[in-house]
Length: 85
Image 1 (tube, one colour):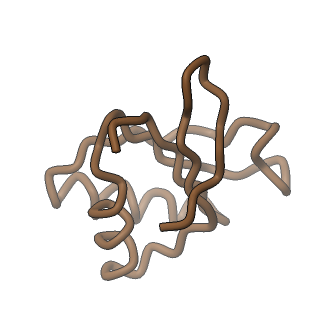
Image 2: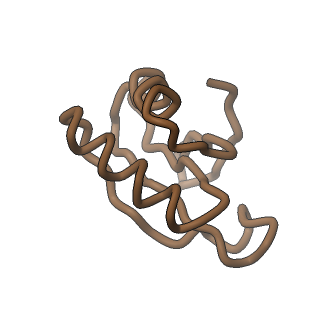
């Protein structure tokens, strides 16, 4: 799966924990605010992964206890599409 991805979190604390877990596992990511069109509460945070195996990233997050809400594949033109992981 060679898309860019956004993995959303309920809080900045979980997003920061997720960032630490992924970087420790050698998975590159960047912490950022969730785009307003994807945020249900208006103040969420997400991790952006570029062309990464998002299934492995989701597994690392689950094993490390960094609870995430949703994962979005960024398709051509940057259109987000929610995906089950």
